[in-house]
Length: 129
Image (cartoon, rainbow, N blue to C red):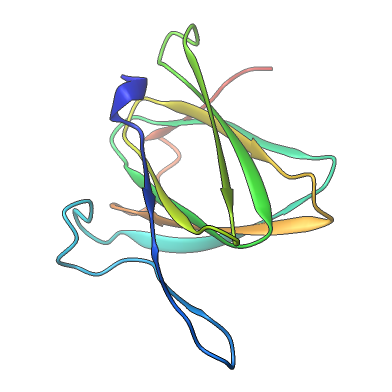
């Protein structure tokens, strides 16, 4: 199941006033449908997660900072680690039934997460730590 997680480089349009990062367009094969978009700030020394979405796919990028993601299969046996940062922007696609958490070594970092359905507490699981 972790093989279904994808990390895809994003197009960077150079601009003297500040580069433009093309995050997503509706014709992208990885875009299913729109549910919600949220920004999440993560501070150094903290970990956000372990979360699992039963039906929701997450399309994540890091517009500011650097974020370490740890992903695990449904049984929490297999692990995959992925770094996203603003130096080489990428789109991280996390399909349903993958556990994930994230952290940063920077003072703080920001992620953008586009999910393909409205958030529902019944659809999300938190791993008891």
